[in-house]
Image (cartoon, rainbow, N blue to C red; front, side):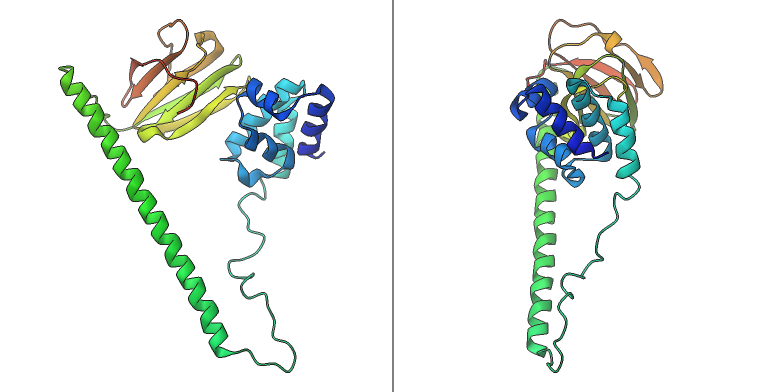
Length: 253
Protein backbone atom coordinates (compact mmCIF):
# COMPACT_ATOMS: atom_id res chain seq x y z
CA UNK A 1 0.00 0.00 0.00
CA UNK A 2 1.35 3.40 -0.98
CA UNK A 3 0.33 5.88 1.71
CA UNK A 4 0.39 8.91 -0.58
CA UNK A 5 -1.76 7.23 -3.24
CA UNK A 6 -4.37 6.19 -0.65
CA UNK A 7 -4.66 9.78 0.64
CA UNK A 8 -4.75 11.32 -2.83
CA UNK A 9 -7.40 8.89 -4.16
CA UNK A 10 -9.59 9.39 -1.08
CA UNK A 11 -9.34 13.19 -1.35
CA UNK A 12 -10.28 13.15 -5.04
CA UNK A 13 -13.21 10.81 -4.43
CA UNK A 14 -14.41 13.23 -1.75
CA UNK A 15 -14.06 16.13 -4.22
CA UNK A 16 -11.83 18.14 -1.87
CA UNK A 17 -9.28 20.72 -2.98
CA UNK A 18 -6.02 21.17 -1.08
CA UNK A 19 -7.12 24.59 0.19
CA UNK A 20 -10.30 23.08 1.65
CA UNK A 21 -8.31 20.32 3.37
CA UNK A 22 -5.94 22.92 4.82
CA UNK A 23 -8.85 24.92 6.26
CA UNK A 24 -10.49 21.87 7.83
CA UNK A 25 -7.40 20.16 9.24
CA UNK A 26 -5.23 23.24 9.96
CA UNK A 27 -2.35 21.38 8.25
CA UNK A 28 -0.40 23.60 5.88
CA UNK A 29 -0.65 22.84 2.17
CA UNK A 30 3.08 22.15 1.85
CA UNK A 31 2.77 19.39 4.44
CA UNK A 32 -0.37 17.96 2.78
CA UNK A 33 1.50 17.77 -0.53
CA UNK A 34 4.43 16.10 1.25
CA UNK A 35 2.06 13.45 2.66
CA UNK A 36 0.51 12.70 -0.73
CA UNK A 37 3.92 12.74 -2.40
CA UNK A 38 5.50 10.69 0.42
CA UNK A 39 8.18 13.37 0.75
CA UNK A 40 8.83 12.51 4.40
CA UNK A 41 11.96 14.68 4.64
CA UNK A 42 9.78 17.76 4.04
CA UNK A 43 7.91 17.11 7.33
CA UNK A 44 9.26 18.46 10.64
CA UNK A 45 9.65 15.02 12.27
CA UNK A 46 8.23 11.47 12.31
CA UNK A 47 5.97 12.49 15.22
CA UNK A 48 4.51 15.29 13.10
CA UNK A 49 4.10 12.90 10.15
CA UNK A 50 2.06 10.45 12.26
CA UNK A 51 -0.07 13.23 13.75
CA UNK A 52 -0.75 14.68 10.29
CA UNK A 53 -1.66 11.21 8.95
CA UNK A 54 -4.20 10.67 11.74
CA UNK A 55 -5.80 14.09 11.21
CA UNK A 56 -5.89 13.80 7.41
CA UNK A 57 -7.27 10.24 7.58
CA UNK A 58 -10.03 11.33 9.96
CA UNK A 59 -11.18 14.02 7.50
CA UNK A 60 -11.21 11.51 4.60
CA UNK A 61 -12.93 8.75 6.57
CA UNK A 62 -9.89 6.48 6.50
CA UNK A 63 -8.34 4.34 9.24
CA UNK A 64 -5.67 6.67 10.63
CA UNK A 65 -4.04 4.02 12.81
CA UNK A 66 -3.65 1.69 9.82
CA UNK A 67 -1.88 4.46 7.90
CA UNK A 68 0.37 5.21 10.88
CA UNK A 69 1.25 1.50 11.18
CA UNK A 70 2.09 1.45 7.48
CA UNK A 71 4.27 4.56 7.97
CA UNK A 72 6.15 2.81 10.78
CA UNK A 73 6.66 -0.27 8.61
CA UNK A 74 7.68 1.49 5.40
CA UNK A 75 9.47 4.63 6.55
CA UNK A 76 10.78 4.57 10.11
CA UNK A 77 13.21 1.62 9.79
CA UNK A 78 15.13 3.41 7.01
CA UNK A 79 14.67 7.01 8.11
CA UNK A 80 17.93 8.82 8.65
CA UNK A 81 20.00 6.62 6.31
CA UNK A 82 21.61 8.55 3.49
CA UNK A 83 21.29 7.20 -0.03
CA UNK A 84 24.93 8.12 -0.71
CA UNK A 85 27.87 8.74 1.63
CA UNK A 86 29.08 12.32 1.82
CA UNK A 87 31.16 13.24 -1.17
CA UNK A 88 30.04 10.53 -3.60
CA UNK A 89 28.44 13.05 -5.94
CA UNK A 90 31.59 15.15 -5.99
CA UNK A 91 33.74 12.11 -6.68
CA UNK A 92 31.27 10.59 -9.12
CA UNK A 93 33.17 11.61 -12.26
CA UNK A 94 35.66 9.03 -13.50
CA UNK A 95 38.78 9.59 -15.48
CA UNK A 96 38.38 8.66 -19.10
CA UNK A 97 40.70 5.96 -20.37
CA UNK A 98 43.95 7.49 -21.56
CA UNK A 99 43.24 10.93 -19.98
CA UNK A 100 44.92 12.42 -16.93
CA UNK A 101 43.00 14.63 -14.54
CA UNK A 102 44.24 18.18 -14.35
CA UNK A 103 45.79 19.05 -10.97
CA UNK A 104 44.63 22.65 -11.19
CA UNK A 105 41.04 21.59 -11.85
CA UNK A 106 41.09 19.30 -8.81
CA UNK A 107 42.36 22.12 -6.60
CA UNK A 108 39.67 24.41 -8.03
CA UNK A 109 36.93 21.92 -7.15
CA UNK A 110 38.32 21.44 -3.64
CA UNK A 111 38.54 25.20 -3.20
CA UNK A 112 34.88 25.66 -4.20
CA UNK A 113 33.81 22.92 -1.77
CA UNK A 114 35.79 24.49 1.08
CA UNK A 115 34.33 27.93 0.37
CA UNK A 116 30.82 26.49 0.29
CA UNK A 117 31.32 24.75 3.66
CA UNK A 118 32.80 27.89 5.25
CA UNK A 119 29.95 29.99 3.87
CA UNK A 120 27.34 27.59 5.23
CA UNK A 121 28.96 27.59 8.69
CA UNK A 122 29.09 31.38 8.64
CA UNK A 123 25.38 31.62 7.77
CA UNK A 124 24.49 29.14 10.52
CA UNK A 125 26.57 31.11 13.03
CA UNK A 126 24.98 34.42 12.07
CA UNK A 127 21.48 32.93 12.19
CA UNK A 128 22.16 31.47 15.64
CA UNK A 129 23.44 34.84 16.85
CA UNK A 130 20.29 36.56 15.56
CA UNK A 131 18.04 34.00 17.25
CA UNK A 132 19.88 34.35 20.56
CA UNK A 133 19.65 38.14 20.32
CA UNK A 134 15.89 37.90 19.64
CA UNK A 135 15.39 35.62 22.64
CA UNK A 136 17.37 37.98 24.87
CA UNK A 137 15.32 40.97 23.66
CA UNK A 138 12.05 39.13 24.31
CA UNK A 139 13.22 38.06 27.76
CA UNK A 140 14.29 41.62 28.59
CA UNK A 141 10.93 42.95 27.38
CA UNK A 142 9.05 40.44 29.58
CA UNK A 143 11.13 41.42 32.60
CA UNK A 144 10.54 45.14 32.01
CA UNK A 145 6.78 44.59 31.75
CA UNK A 146 6.86 42.65 35.01
CA UNK A 147 8.76 45.43 36.76
CA UNK A 148 6.32 48.07 35.47
CA UNK A 149 3.40 46.02 36.83
CA UNK A 150 5.11 45.84 40.23
CA UNK A 151 5.72 42.09 39.90
CA UNK A 152 8.87 40.09 39.61
CA UNK A 153 9.13 38.10 36.36
CA UNK A 154 8.67 34.33 36.64
CA UNK A 155 11.98 32.55 36.39
CA UNK A 156 11.89 28.80 35.63
CA UNK A 157 13.66 26.56 38.09
CA UNK A 158 14.97 23.53 36.26
CA UNK A 159 12.76 21.89 33.62
CA UNK A 160 9.20 20.59 33.51
CA UNK A 161 7.79 17.66 31.53
CA UNK A 162 4.52 18.00 29.64
CA UNK A 163 2.52 15.11 28.13
CA UNK A 164 -0.67 15.54 26.08
CA UNK A 165 -2.98 12.67 25.06
CA UNK A 166 -5.94 13.55 22.80
CA UNK A 167 -9.34 12.02 23.64
CA UNK A 168 -11.42 14.13 21.23
CA UNK A 169 -10.13 16.25 18.29
CA UNK A 170 -8.89 19.63 19.52
CA UNK A 171 -6.94 22.47 17.92
CA UNK A 172 -3.71 23.05 19.84
CA UNK A 173 -0.65 25.26 19.58
CA UNK A 174 2.27 24.47 21.91
CA UNK A 175 5.31 26.72 22.21
CA UNK A 176 8.54 26.07 24.03
CA UNK A 177 10.83 28.67 25.57
CA UNK A 178 11.85 31.40 23.14
CA UNK A 179 8.82 30.87 20.88
CA UNK A 180 9.84 27.41 19.59
CA UNK A 181 6.77 25.87 17.88
CA UNK A 182 6.43 22.30 19.20
CA UNK A 183 2.87 21.75 17.92
CA UNK A 184 2.26 24.04 14.99
CA UNK A 185 -1.38 25.12 15.36
CA UNK A 186 -3.14 21.94 14.17
CA UNK A 187 -6.20 19.87 15.03
CA UNK A 188 -4.85 16.82 16.84
CA UNK A 189 -6.64 13.55 16.10
CA UNK A 190 -7.91 11.09 18.70
CA UNK A 191 -5.09 8.98 20.09
CA UNK A 192 -2.34 11.52 19.41
CA UNK A 193 0.31 11.51 22.14
CA UNK A 194 2.88 14.29 22.51
CA UNK A 195 5.52 14.64 25.24
CA UNK A 196 8.19 17.31 25.76
CA UNK A 197 10.50 18.66 28.46
CA UNK A 198 11.45 22.34 28.58
CA UNK A 199 12.00 25.15 31.08
CA UNK A 200 8.80 26.88 29.97
CA UNK A 201 5.78 26.18 27.73
CA UNK A 202 2.84 28.16 26.39
CA UNK A 203 -0.23 26.02 25.61
CA UNK A 204 -2.74 27.75 23.32
CA UNK A 205 -6.28 26.84 22.21
CA UNK A 206 -7.24 29.22 19.34
CA UNK A 207 -10.84 27.91 19.18
CA UNK A 208 -11.32 27.20 22.88
CA UNK A 209 -11.30 23.79 24.59
CA UNK A 210 -12.89 21.40 27.04
CA UNK A 211 -10.81 19.51 29.60
CA UNK A 212 -12.53 16.29 28.49
CA UNK A 213 -10.94 16.60 25.02
CA UNK A 214 -7.48 15.68 26.26
CA UNK A 215 -5.42 14.39 29.17
CA UNK A 216 -2.72 16.79 30.33
CA UNK A 217 0.12 15.67 32.60
CA UNK A 218 2.63 18.12 34.06
CA UNK A 219 5.66 16.70 35.85
CA UNK A 220 3.97 13.28 35.74
CA UNK A 221 0.75 14.48 37.43
CA UNK A 222 -2.58 14.99 35.70
CA UNK A 223 -3.72 18.63 35.61
CA UNK A 224 -7.01 20.22 34.59
CA UNK A 225 -6.74 23.72 33.15
CA UNK A 226 -8.98 26.53 34.41
CA UNK A 227 -12.09 26.79 32.25
CA UNK A 228 -12.27 29.62 29.73
CA UNK A 229 -14.82 30.92 27.23
CA UNK A 230 -13.42 31.10 23.69
CA UNK A 231 -9.69 31.25 22.82
CA UNK A 232 -7.41 30.57 25.79
CA UNK A 233 -3.73 30.26 26.58
CA UNK A 234 -1.70 29.10 29.58
CA UNK A 235 1.94 29.43 30.64
CA UNK A 236 3.55 26.38 32.21
CA UNK A 237 6.75 27.26 34.07
CA UNK A 238 9.22 24.88 35.70
CA UNK A 239 8.96 23.24 38.11
CA UNK A 240 5.11 22.97 37.92
CA UNK A 241 3.49 26.40 37.82
CA UNK A 242 0.46 26.98 35.51
CA UNK A 243 -0.96 30.45 34.94
CA UNK A 244 -3.33 32.12 32.47
CA UNK A 245 -1.75 33.94 29.49
CA UNK A 246 -3.28 36.52 27.09
CA UNK A 247 -5.76 34.94 24.61
CA UNK A 248 -4.02 33.72 21.44
CA UNK A 249 -4.55 34.80 17.85
CA UNK A 250 -5.36 32.45 14.97
CA UNK A 251 -1.71 31.87 14.01
CA UNK A 252 0.85 29.77 15.85
CA UNK A 253 3.10 31.18 17.11
